Length: 303
Image (cartoon, rainbow, N blue to C red; front, top):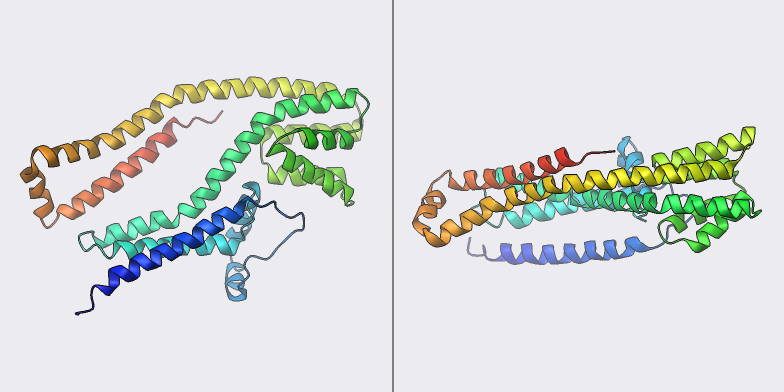
């Protein structure tokens, strides 16, 4: 019992080492992905055999590819487990926090790496969607000038910025390695699951079977995509009011609690000193967080 002071030191040391490992993992995520397919779920054979029993690793692998991260499924799942264990180990040092609140906070922390993957994937798809109408116009002009589709795609990859150039260059390299252009475009659909990309690939497939004026179709698609992007921008501008409201409603109770603690400390001391006070405070914090995300989900209108 006399060595109780070692526990906080161990917790802080463990947290520091874990944060260093996670930062190195995030730094290495910016590397270019190899064109060679890697079906290995984890470098640890035992963990790989365990993950192979489930179906969700394939979904995680696809999401990692769409987010353009070089992580393996094993690294992601280990990051999830490590984040949850780290949060639980740190919060257990604070005896005034209820056990159920420690478990809930550890569960939220465990979802952190997965939320990072989803956030990076969403931002990358949005950036690709914003670039794609101009890319179709460039393809249309290059094909009108006499370039075949593959040559026009090669020029587009050289003139565009990320993430469009990465995906188009991958299509070009796959065709040079002997993959049919139809299969390479299908792989593009898997990496970039957007309706705009589906329409473009469907137009290319239809042109390959029946012929027609592909340049005219690309120009029409680009115009329709710009109009849809303008509508999405208007909807997001209208929904911004709801997101600000969610932020204000989340911060306001915290601000009022701090103000009450300064103005009337005895009033807050009654809550802190009550046996159920810490449970009520923890429940209020989690309710605020849940309400914030619920409001953001409500105002997030998909067009």
